[in-house]
Length: 272
Image (tube, rainbow, N blue to C red; front, side, top):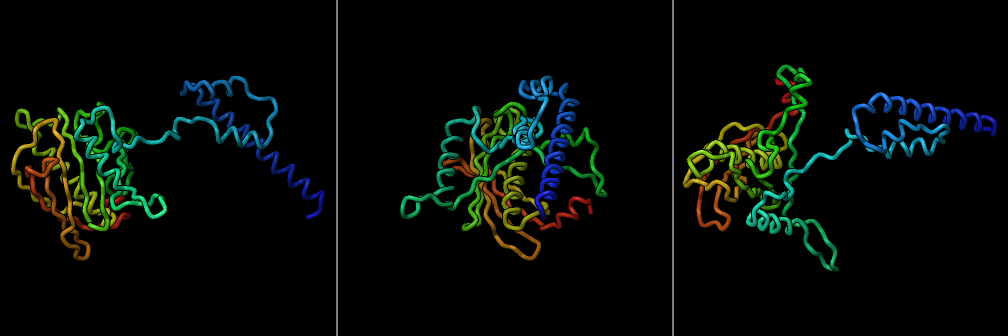
């Protein structure tokens, strides 16, 4: 490529970048009524008269657009967690890293699983649900606005031991018998823990069978441990056992067994 063609190419690229930046500025101007961010409003009301390609790209990257916000991880501590919940969280979280020889940190035997309140929803036949339903859809156990009102929990998985431990604090909206947790809420948490564990072992799974034996009621507002262990895997089938105990292990609240079937993700999304 000679110098004249290189110069023409550089001018063309610069022109395209400036055009992209100005188009992006017009786009932002169209949505300024939907945001109150002072930085964005300043850029829209007082647009630069001259912009270089480098500053144009830097501006596009740095703009604080609301739809790039990071989702909340509900498995992290919040103000509603009681002392026992925090103690157990700190205990298992300390096992996610170990100190190797030479003082370096490396991955430990346990791994904390992040938890969010939204997932992409599909209707049967592969049709998207309406935009309104999609925008309001929330994971059942993560749909409460007030921290501590219902399901407060965090899961840790140990792949070597093929075990999963959930620290669960039952909120005041989960009452069944006076002063105790509703049996359906306990079943929900058992399904959540065993299903999450099975998905770590076999990728996408669906619950095929869940058998629960209630031994003693769980006091409302208390913290318990829900432990899931792999029993056997046979083809598409994953069998796990589960127990719900007091945090010191002295009391058995619930025992359960569950069967999960591996599913094809594409078939699941298409409703097949």
